[in-house]
Length: 363
Image (cartoon, rainbow, N blue to C red):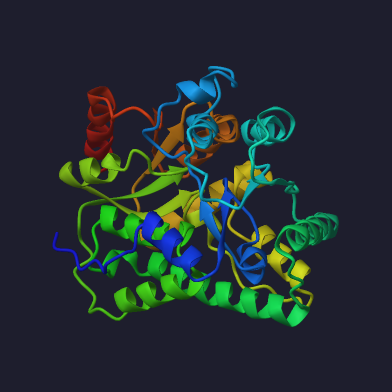
């Protein structure tokens, strides 16, 4: 289909421009973290989802062979100087692999940048909310020491509202995606720019797309994409060629981070509320029944006929849920397909054949 994609600055351009303006860079590993807190300290969060297609042998000297390629590639990228531009490194403990990577960086690798682990609760109780708010307060103190800044509560709330505005536009892009003049590849390039663009720059991009006239929404067999990250992104073009399209997602880098606005006037609680009130996520300990209800509800809203679980190999939080989750979806009449990939490998023909067969079944 014809796409009307706005010009999206690259990571390199964005980092260079931010640093030239006097800002600093925080390299952030997946998945959940307080963007607003970093921006209040003059730090631009730039997320590190691997990245794909790096020489993983450098990280393999320090990690076991059965670790996921997101953690493996991130360490390899750091060891060859890929994160030299960063002024600090944030490691949220989303899973055992990232928790282990954080410990490895602190205790053995010792990069020149300070490394700040971030512990996330596995629930939505008041105690979980308080714990996460306290984690953000502890991170505030660490950032205060390395930047020499002390943002006030008013500064933090201003930063939070800026992020809430950008996330509201992100949610609107997801809601209106079937009628946007973007194919799947262009759509994900746009929304994944949220991983590194300042909130105000992303908001401007999002508005420019949302202001374009709607297009015909019938693009192929409608599917939901679930998993961590859509890499290699060749999947999106391959599915389009086969007559399919993704009308919604349950991706850690995208749909699972559609955070609602917070309610509290305490900035630390408000940042914690936003993350804990986000969509279900296995890395936050969401019950399988909650995840199933979310996927079934999404299918009903969008008309999706199936779910493609696009799983990074050795991703334990995803793989633990799949047997019961898929059975629950099947009982509700929503078929699914599992595809396991590695960030460093091209999509094998066998995988493409399985996807094509799945499209024929659900179409």
